[in-house]
Image (cartoon, rainbow, N blue to C red; front, side, top):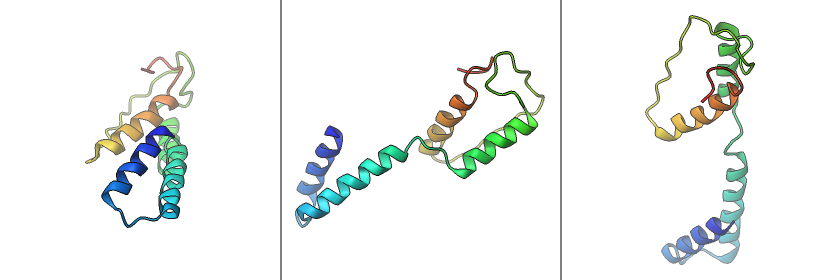
Length: 99
């Protein structure tokens, strides 16, 4: 929450026309976004289902056999890469391929 307060203060210096209620709403929006940041979305769930179906039915299980199919994911944005990496690392946790 301290980071949000700092950002709100910075925003208030840059945009002096913001009213206290608007600043409060911005802080609440940032808090909601922070809580949702690590939730996966339907696209990630679809990818995990595909991996489970085509590569590793027992993904996340120690010693689970790995299929022969590989996937390469391209993205232009580092935020997207980090988001996918976060979710996929948790998805394979416990298997012999986990980081």
